Amino acid sequence: MGHQAGTVTDLHPRLQKLQAKLAVSPLTKINDPELADRQLELWIKRDDLLHPIISGNKWRKLKYILNQALHNGADTIVSMGGAYSNHLHALAFTGKALGLKTIGYIRGEQPAQLNATLHDLLDWGMELRFVSRSDYRQLRDYKGHDSLPELQAGQYWLPEGGATDLALQGVAELIDEIDVGFDTLVVACGTGTTLAGLLTSPLTQQAIGAAALKGGDFLIDDVEQLLNNQGIISHADRRILVDYHFGGFAKTTPALLAFMQDFQRQHGIELEPIYTGKLLFALYDLIRKGYFPAGQRIVAIHTGGLQGKRK
Image (cartoon, rainbow, N blue to C red; front, side, top):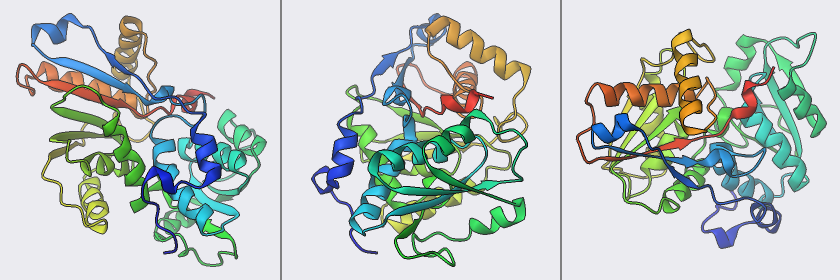
């Protein structure tokens, strides 16, 4: 596997320089009579405020993956995502900042007019390769950084969403930044990697993931596989909610949009409908159903991704 990242001191100098430009994301308490009535505390870990572009869980997942790539002498990162991919958006910007070339396999035919995300990818030097949906699904079979067929010398393969063992290490650092005691962590799930990363910390006693896509039951096994690959046994209670997808990935309903608008108006925190909007909707639904006992302190992870709202 080459160099395995360990502590922060193992960070490649180029990554250290980039990380110095990132903020520590704040922890914001949500003041809401509905929560107070139920004797619950809700805090939001504002990872959307890490950086204007490489915000949220995307940076945390990329950090040690790119560290390995740099230490291995890679000059190009090859990855995959949809036309609004937060992962590719963060990768393209980070690649440019680190002096790495990037190549992105984009799901579906090239649109006649590129959206804002794809324009950014091109502006930051990413080579775009549009592939059919069936070919895109096949790309998911390649898990190792050197497993993609026809990979050239100096190229490093990064699976969809950064779903690799090394990603867990960066996500776990988030827990050390939470400076209040907490009972439950909640996070949106696309690949389940962020949830798995949270479960690697011994401080996590209970974690709930909200699947952003339809048929998300497979995420339960994927999370366990990521933990097993690292030899990690987590004793935390965990649950993945699979009924808050609102019709499927990137699908919305008037109820979801109304909830988001109301939450943003009350608390001044911007949400997006693919991940964080669904997460907070699911969380409030559980709260209203009496899922959490009185006295619990819940921390929700804002995983960023606000750029995906653009057209």
